[in-house]
Amino acid sequence: MDPKVPASSADAKPTLETFATPAAAPARRDSARLRHLTRATIGILTLAILYTCYFTQEALLPVVLAFLLALLLSPLVSFLERLYLPRVAGGLIVLLVLICGFGAGVYGLAQPARTWVKNIPEEVHTLQQRFEFLSGPFHQAQKVREKIETMTSSQPAGSAMVVSSGKPGVFVGALSSVPHVLGDIGVIIVLTYFLLSTGDNFLRRMVSIAPGLREKKFVVGMARDIQVEISRYLLTIGAINFGLGCATATAMALLGLSNPLLWGAVAALFNFVPYVGPLATIAALALAGLSSFDSLGHALAVPGVFLLLAICEGQFITPYIVGRRLEVNPAFVFLWLLLWGSLWGLIGLLLAGPLLACFSIVCQYVPSLHWIFVMISNTATEKGAEV
Image 1: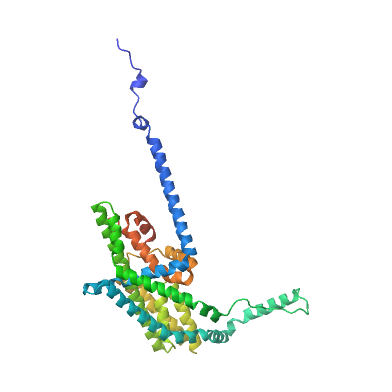
Image 2: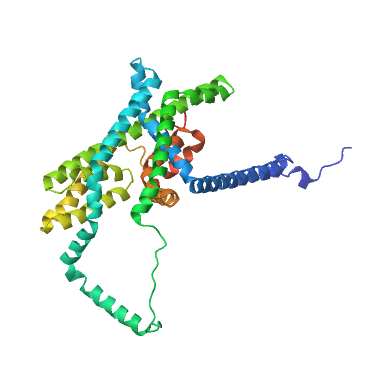
């Protein structure tokens, strides 16, 4: 007679623990530890990159500028190459044209810039006299503060204050930095020429490292897409900013403001800095207009016209030409500007816009970084997730 199975044992229903393998729990723990380790590694790597950018800015700035210039000028060199001109000669011609144009622009704008900087104290004094009725309460408060400081001063009556200046003057410091600036410009020119003349050598090295044919095709397609997108974006934004500078110079000349070419160059250069650059241009034009014209309406028309031009450029021209797929969250743009401004100062602010565009394009096309593009973009698409 067969032994009877207890009812409680026969009627028991299988649970998840019944089918779970003994190695499932350790595997889940290992996976969680791997995720935490990966996040910690990414955080440490990010901090290491930021510290490296901060402490080696004198060496990295020329390299970054050279790479951006090479990406900007690469389409022109490729066009000359399609006309059966070797890249060595095409890169040299494009670079010489750029140097001549830059030198002519600096030579033509140097004197107006020196004159404007020299007249800044006079312009500020003119504005103070013009709006003196607004500064009355502040002057009274300052007089009260000076009286209180005089009454509470502990300095003996017969003592004399000795003021010593241990720092060199502004012009002496500027002259002492000229050799360093010229050396950086030389490094930028030489490195840019080598990057333009070598062409796709670095890409061929990457393809040779890839293990299989599928990986080689993936590397070639992704690298070429990223290079084309970045070059096209930098060239387009440069052309748009140049057009904004020409329009600003024309408008300032029609309004009768002195040195219109200088203000056009300022508008074009500062427009590379998102949000902050146009605001700084508006403030500078407001100062110039209020110190140049007696009529308040005429003076306010100077920054007002540029504001209209900036709105047309930012809301209509750039979105229509470039498209809205590279729009970045304004909060992230502000944090990005703070980051590069604190790392590299004014030059960091000027480079923040192009660097942000390059970073966004790379994150858009690299599958493992596409989640960053989704996080920072206003209109993130799935393009680039599958190349």
